[in-house]
Image 1 (cartoon, rainbow, N blue to C red):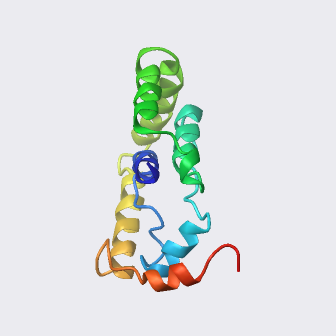
Image 2 (image 1 turned 120 degrees about the vertical axis):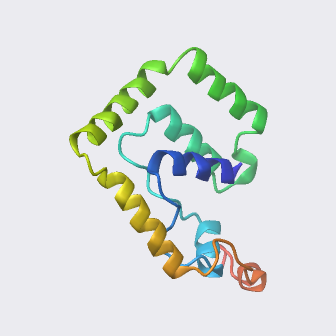
Length: 137
C-alpha cells in the first residue's frame, strides 16, 4: 500500500521519488523513520489525503486495497470531479503558456540526476543496518 502512495505521488509530480538522493540503505532507513516526499502544489486534496494514508508510518493504519478501490471509484463517479478538473485545467494552462514544457524538462533532468546517483533503481539493502537501527535508540 505504501508503494501505491508512491505511485500516486509519481503521477502528481512527474518525477521519481527522492530523486536527489542515492537509493541505498540510508534512504531506506530514513523512509522507515518517516521521511516522505514533498506534496506537489496543485495536487487535489482528496489525492493528497489518500497518498498520505498510504504512507502512514504504521502499516496497520494504511487503507486496504478494497478501501483504496472504493475511494478511487467515489472520485470518478461522485465527489471530486470538479477538484480534479480544476487541477487538470491549472496544469494544462501551465503547459500551454510555455511551448518548451519546462515541467517535462525538469522531470527529465531529475531522472538524469537519479541515474547519476544510482547504478540501478533498485539495489540490495543492508537489512542488518536497518534492523540494528530503530526509532527507539
